[in-house]
Length: 285
Image 1 (tube, rainbow, N blue to C red):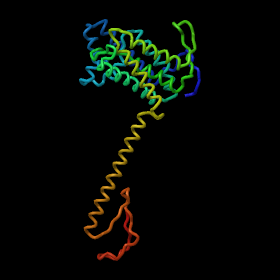
Image 2 (image 1 turned 180 degrees about the vertical axis):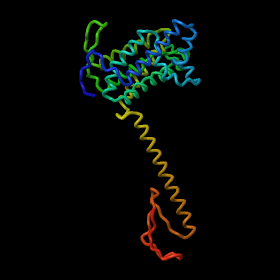
Image 3 (image 1 turned 45 degrees about the vertical axis):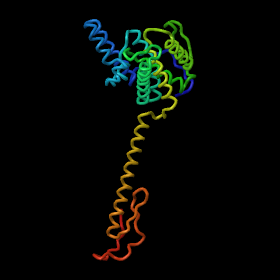
Image 4 (image 1 turned 90 degrees about the vertical axis):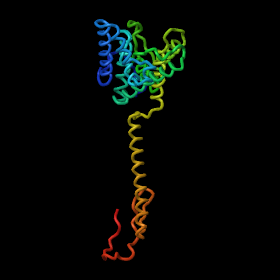
């Protein structure tokens, strides 16, 4: 990213994966609203229990919830706040990091929010319980902010305080305020602390991604590891086949040699001519 490039309070491009994510979250919220307004509350509750993050259900097979919970929201302001951050910060990062790496970071942060929530629920930290559900894209949105603060903390945001007063603040200070708020919210006694751990997880995994994941991303590294392992497996099979062929040829009193990579080593001379012909051709691999 270009260091210290101010981010004005303006509408960024609405395209790419940012647009897809925002529209997906908005569409799911409309479904939630329709179920609430025109159907029985049971259907809305079932819909949210099926796609939202409930730690006890995740460990009983609903693995998809570690990602799908980020598409559901409790109310209009909850949706608006998360989508605003996703749009403003996500568009910037998608333009400068590329669509694949941006999406990887976002989903990595969402997953991190889920994993920390599940761990906290089963550890019963600060009143967290496995039967309490969590919904919202806050973990992914905060992960984007944390990653931006790590790679370019001195970049400035121009915000509207209470949507009226413009203020300019560096990203690292904005994230520090958010981290402090999440920490305090997690510690304050309340009947429901689990959602805060999704925030903690998003911030933590956003930091880990920006700090330790190579610039080409997890997907590229995973593919490189896969092909490296596959190639090593192929080389091992080649060496094993070469050893078996050496043993086989010794039965016919023929000395056939291969190097440590399984490549055939031609003999320096053919020796006596073959009994079935006078050809002096060399061994070929």
